[in-house]
Length: 242
Length: 106
Image 1 (tube, rainbow over the protein chains, first blue to last red):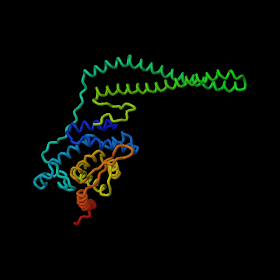
Image 2: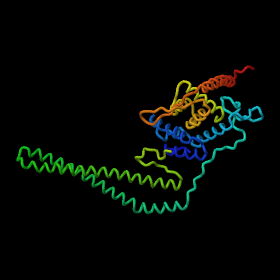
Image 3: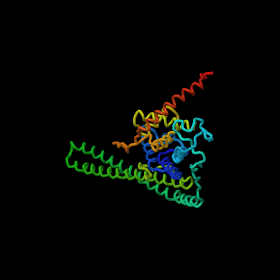
């Protein structure tokens, strides 16, 4: 399996390492995490780094066969002692001991994910609730919030600018009228700042809505495929850090 | 070519690069993959194997930006092994080239 993101790669790698009882999992994961960070610094996308790193199962096989040869260091029989040498280059050319003759492959195939019927029914019921009520309500509230934010900001600006103009035209006239544009000016400023706060609040709630959507997608992915597929926005930190 | 030969030569490549100076993982992988096609992820298992065998060593360098970085360095044992393998490889490739070019003595 070729992954498409750093988190997906590291999670799959950890799961596969643990399934095959490879030691030093933590060190290995740190090496690969560093590799992703260096790749990002060099301008590569996570997907590109994943593709070049290759199949996780291929990497795991290397760690497993490495443990195998380490367990039978130099005791492997010489190729001329009746053992067929499959490589054809002699057991010890380039310093590799021949593979141990009768060892069972310790590499374990990944367990196939089985979606459970109960969970599927549960999540579909939840979907009905989410799509018929929760999401439309939430989306409506956010749209309302955004329109209030925009109208507050715009009307504040209009009042503010208008107050400046009246202020200037009145300069040549009677001084008393100067107070009215001043109050208008502060009123405009107040409305603009209110509008600003509402804009910030709407940005926050849109982000929240997107994250809720991602969580919904991820929970479906978990039920149907066994793992998450998207990362929430604004979460730079590793999902796990063991 | 996913055989002993490729694994063995990759080991020689890593040792030879490290003979010329210390490198960190990403750097090492890029040097090798600029010369030949490899599944980059398989370099790290190789590094672990070389480290367990005592041919290489690693140390951490703290960096101002970003997390600390792991550098690999060749050991004295590693240098000996690199020399051995290099000699072996050179005579081996000369022999193979002769056979491929049909220059063997009749």
